[in-house]
Image (cartoon, rainbow, N blue to C red):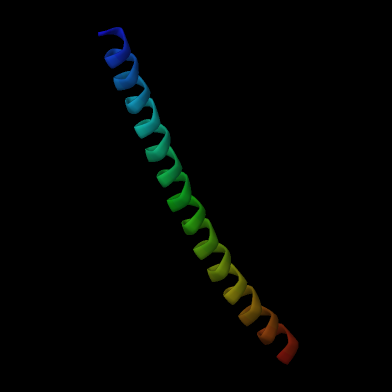
Length: 52
């Protein structure tokens, strides 16, 4: 019984780690999208300033 309980606890811990990794991956993806958005706007601002 102890082995089964230990395996259950391990499985719960691993599931928690996997969920945390998924959340981190989503966060990184959102950061990449924000960086691309900012780069695009900086490029547009630079174009406007260069045209002045």
